[in-house]
Amino acid sequence: MNAQKPLSILIVDDDPDHVFLARAALQRAPHWVVETAGTVAAAKEKLREAAYGAVVADFRLPDGEGLDLIDSVPPDTAVVVMTAQGNERVAVEAMQRGAYDYLIKDISFPELLPDVIQKALNRHRSRIEGARQQATVRKENRKLVQANQKLKELDAAKSEFLSTASHELRTPLTIIREFISIMRDGLAGPISDDQRECLDSALGNCDRLETLINDILDLQKIESGRLRIRRRRSDVSSLLRQCYHDFLPRFATRQQTLELDVDPSLPPALCDEDKIGQVLINLLGNANKYAPNGARVVLSAQTRGGRLVVSVEDDGPGIPAEDQVQVFEKFVQLNRQHGKGAKGTGLGLAIAKNIVELHEGDIWLQSTLGAGSTFYFTLPLFTEDRAVEALVRDRLLITEVSGAELTVTLVKIDPESAAATFADPEARRQTLEHLQSIATAQLRRREDEVFVADSETMLIIITESDASEGEAIAERVTRAVGETLGVRARLRQATVTVSSGIDPRDWIAAARERLSPVEVALAGERSA
Image (cartoon, rainbow, N blue to C red; front, side, top):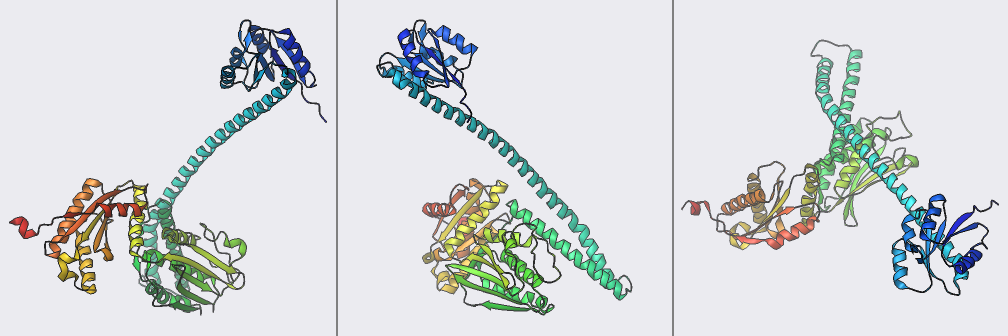
């Protein structure tokens, strides 16, 4: 075993008896080397000449106080202060100035001194090590921040390059495809069967490249926060039936069976039908592409746990377990174990995952090698409150990137003031839809929206505008609604400016609390 490295201890005291007792007590530890000094000046000289593990200094010395040494002691040296009598002020001052302990020179002083010094050394080493680790952590954090910033810059440059390159490729690709189509159809002159086969292959690759370009642009929009989704009350059973009929010819070309298992009475979901249609196209397209000829594929939907669950199931070869964990990552190809190895862009499932998550849903896979695969995704069921919350939340995602302000205006109609137009449920529905179109006509931007809260006979207008412009829009909409109803309508209205720091539900609640009556003059009354 290696011998412990000697450690020098400096005792600073002008009392020879105390120095003798301290030296005798400390020299029992074989690895401690004891030196002494009788004054502050002598101690400072020794500190300049040599390194010490600890300094034990009397509080009162002929030329000053032991505390005066603390500022002269190097950072790697522990300090213990001694005094002939207990003094709380001295103890507090010593600890505040950096001493590690305080010891009274009473009858037990020689016995306690080694233990006090050892504890001071241990605490000092812990403090030094802690400071060293903190400095290392700060240094590594700075490196991480710099590396993260560099990665963000590289990622932004990558996204910008992909977006620019994709846009630049679109125009020449369209021209190439059109000329190939003209030649393939014989419009530029007769072609042989072999030439037609070559041109068919060229057209297929043009279509594949176009799909890749569209996928890259879609993913770039999603990752940059610029993909707009407009979630509304949606009949998902109708959407699934449309996708089913659209894909039947594609499945027939491979002798595959596509089945639809959907209850027509499914409750409405809250979603952007175009975006969810894109998810379905990707999942059905993958099933058609990767399942073998003659496979069976089932498109189904059901409610489960208060959510709508959509699934695409095939009885194909399945996906290996090691591939399932990365199947939703970008540029990952499904490694099916059957067929010639169909190729895709490797972006479709990543896009589908992002779209589903923007809908506050989940997407996952269940697959057993040799027994097929099932892809599931969920959507929230429609409720009016959930739709209003989604309206604000979806727009906040866009304005956080663009930096635009968002304003929400509520226009609540008292149905009793226009009883004839709200006489029955159908009349109520038609009136609110008409008012929605009238209000929409008052907006200036294509992105601005009007939502109908049927249960409250209320229009909710969301616009990218500041407070003053929002008030002007609210005034125009309120006037148009009153004139359309053709009566002295009793309306209440409120406008709030939204920020991302507060939950959308709280903004809507705040707007409801601010609803106040407004007087609407009809056109004839204003001219009079």
